[in-house]
Image (cartoon, rainbow, N blue to C red):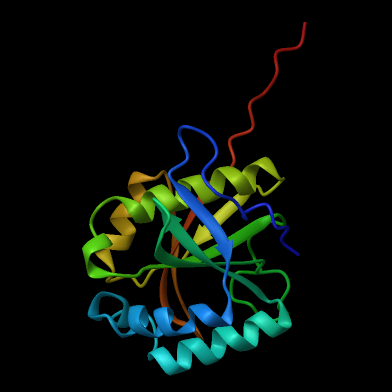
Length: 182
């Protein structure tokens, strides 16, 4: 199970984003975001997504959160361990892998570098607590997301098709520095 290492407000000079637990009171905002054309193109219908998120909140299979920038909610982010589900399509990834899914909410926040910035800051927190790999799986036609992840250091693993649909599986691996031994 994932720890709560991701809960934070920006505390370091290089941290731009705060991560907080999703609450039921956030659902109206999520419904608006999921209805936006730039989100709706890649996620399911708002009511379907909200129902799945509510169910996952109860089971603990994902950790849903709101990402804030300058004190304002700008994105939905969920993290999951693909090894927690017996039939998850990414169980072939190494142990200590965490998957993330993200949606930038309002149209005015799209194209401003938030997606890559959020992924990198969140990855740094996960790597600091023992995660070895972060995976993302944008739709193969979602060139904006793929480009953002590539700029952030994610690399292509393979293209898959699962019960979630087509996926362009990408990974960011923790670079463990080797210590020089005398």
